[in-house]
Image (cartoon, rainbow, N blue to C red; front, side, top):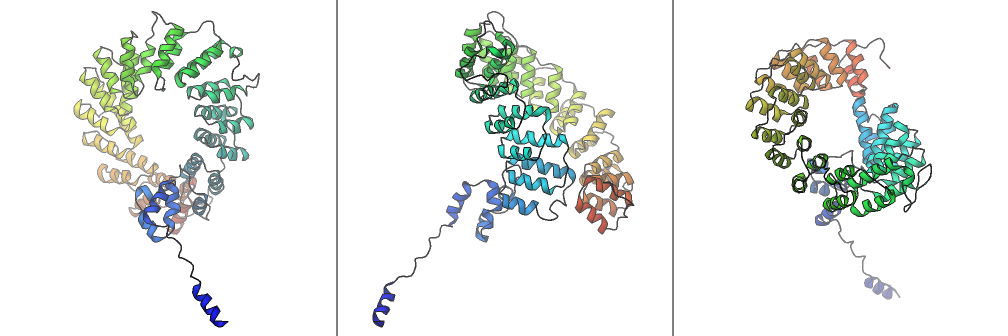
Length: 514
């Protein structure tokens, strides 16, 4: 019997080893199926080899709070005691906005409890708007449960959600009491979502309108608005269907043609030819058709086609090309003698569209060099500023322009201005840089412009910014270290800053502000 048992034991094989599925090439494929944040906070934490496979570079080790973060990792970082101590009030508000846009309701609940802020109606409305625009129904529902208010009875929230095609968000908002409005239907059509427009019309409070019902009860003016919205955002079939339901005996043709000319639909030509046949513009051809086409990404081809069909172009089309940065469209118009207005050129200056400015100069268009410098300074556009000074010989001596430059406090812009002889007030530059918490700006103002470092208002500004690094630098150089500094820092709401100041022996005020 013992022999049989021994023989049986010899027959039984040990359990086979488990297959190794954690091979580097397979892990790469797993990672490809995960969101980047999931790779950072979960996959890289499996073991040392996996962490080394996804090294700590910018792409693989940065958690982007505007994107979904696994709730376990978010709570571990943000719900821990003292997690918010390093953040100023402004940074805490930014954390809420980023989390709301990520779409993870559980994370937003954690953030709202952790930041320790009592949000005013404007801040509540902003979070709701962000959630609605991003299409996050769960986040929207979470904010509603907390009693967050929305501006305008929630109409704007529904409008932005509808325009992006987020039906689930619209349903949450409307069921919670948000006001219905025809502007929401127009926004939906403009965004290219005719099915959602029908869904909204079925929920019209006065009298629901079915998907095949006439739109005449809305009135001629509203029907025109909806038709123009559909002309811009929907395909030809949807536009034709809506037109049939409007039952208009007469309609202003140019509004529809304008919308089609600027439509983001690929087959815009088909819509345009249909609209011409139906609305028959005849000899009355508006300049606004070419204006709308000029601002499109493929504006050059659109404009050439429309010009060939006899639609006229004016300075408004050139303005649109300048605003959009469409150099090809601008070239086409300039060759025909059509130039933009000065205001549009100023906007191009502010946005740093240097290729547009070069094209205008190439065709002999007058450029206001002084205005160009001012606009470039106000927009923080260093390349445009350098081009205006070096190519156009623009002056940098305007005192009001200097004030704008200091207020913006872009260090590279300030350096370029000084390099070309602009007299800068070092104390003013240092104070503004301190207000923004920018140590390099303060250092440059002190070292290059001779700003006085031992000024109480300089330390006050640094304290309000919440920058420990800047306050430490100022203190090392003898800047005032008195109780009022801690009072100013308390207003920034950064606990870590206050703790550091106490450790450094900053005198305590008799009473801190609430």
